[in-house]
Image 1 (cartoon, rainbow, N blue to C red):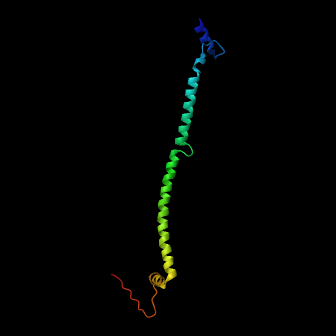
Image 2: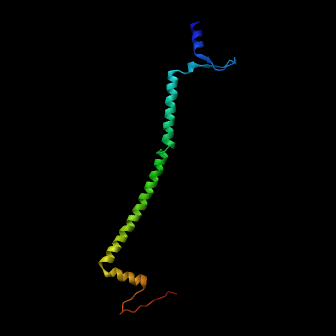
Image 3: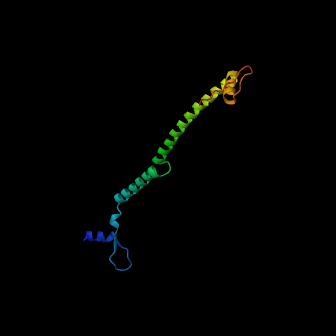
Length: 120
């Protein structure tokens, strides 16, 4: 008899009529509530880890972009070193200036004769 009273105390009739729909409050136990709460928190943290801002996918993409930028920086630093050496050479002597004038502008000295040889 006590068992029947306990069952009646844990069930609630949700319908206004007498349709026989009953909702059991026995399902809402502390272990079940804790289990579903922890599961919900774990799922939300995993979603943020994989999909949200600062996710692993975003971190991997940023690492790829960093690697690409470092390669580009290395190429540009090599170019800068070559240009710096050329500027230094141009500042120090006339040899580089003369070489550029001959190669790019076709200039010759006063006592020189220019011969152009064409290949057929």
